[in-house]
Length: 541
Ligand code: PMP
Image (cartoon, rainbow, N blue to C red; front, side):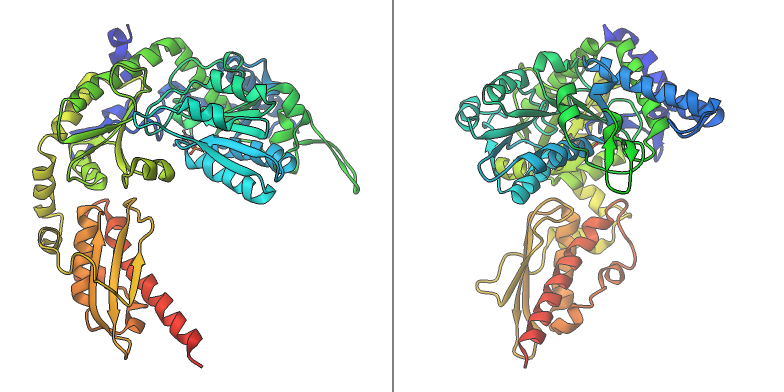
């Protein structure tokens, strides 16, 4: 149905007319941030032209108008997810802040060494890192429900883990890498059987399908405005009214109190209790407009559209033997995102190639490093869709992926890149490890999202005698590592600790958009040299 008026929808998003170096933009990075329709950003103009003012503080017309619009925006977002009203809907900065609000307001105060936090291997860092921190601060144990090879949560394992000690279950509704739609209602029931709190990360679900907090029986649901046709700088936390009333604030200051003396303060009612200081007023009002925009289309239709595009891409990628796709296979319910790798082409190189064709995708670990470790891959390329994408966009993507290896070589040879990049990528010097190096330094996590390692043999006088690198990084980063190894042989470690050579070695010719890939290896070897020099200085009497 949506396909009938997709062209109308596209006209609501003027940015889609943009060209990237003369090529029409194909925007497939919606799981990171969606585009914003004109009606939403017009809210900003109206707000700042007509009633910009601080809320809840002034007895004047502008303040009254801003307050009413901002309060009603809470009701609108509450309605969007099936909550009762503004008392259950807190505006935050984003999903990350929403999860932190629950973790600090509730987790930090109530959890202890006897408690367990159960979460999953497919969590975004927004929740994984936050709960890891709460576990560390409270002595609680954190456990991860396993992800099966086909990208589902292992429900048997969930049943084993969720038990009487479980205090919190924190689960993502939709995986931002695998596209899996998790059975959150079933998981919530399990957790509630043991009186655990259920926190749902709705960053990828609220924008893409009908979500009803009552149906899923979530205690808390976090989501972001910028992934649902809204502006940046605003997110939401839904919480059951009783829980928000009981819960402690996370930030303190003005707006969140009703009465303050030198001795103590009395908190305001939810949601204001959790919105300390001047909140994102225009952003909140604009987000309500985004909810209107999506409801006009119909969230059922958004879901169908997303699923149709995902299935279309999945089927075509599955038919190729040079592509590995992650997550549930075609035919299963999916969110509108597909992560994959093309054999022999690093994600960052693929992103560059696609950008050359005007296609925006994301490559890397997508803020899910543990999941990528579980999948045993350094990173992946993710194409993600929204209401304005078409099968033509997918065809453009598929076409760009054809012969990616050859295209990667051609683009490395193009004039945008220094000749040394192609030469060193094709004929790497000092590649492979040394057998028993004096020093090794891993990049841990480079910007390319994978491990590179330098091996160094150091002579008695502190000079580099031999140097080698091992890397699964992108072509640019590997080439730079090779160039550096040639340059550094014979240098003193003390000099390397001050290294700033790569820009000169490449005659200042930085590949477009790839600065991080270029400077990464130099950062690693410089850091290694600094550590070595520091160790020597501290052990020398
Ligand atoms: N959770 C998931 C599943 C996400 O996809 C994202 C955004 N990539 C986040 C949390 C974090 O969202 P934000 O950066 O808006 O806080």
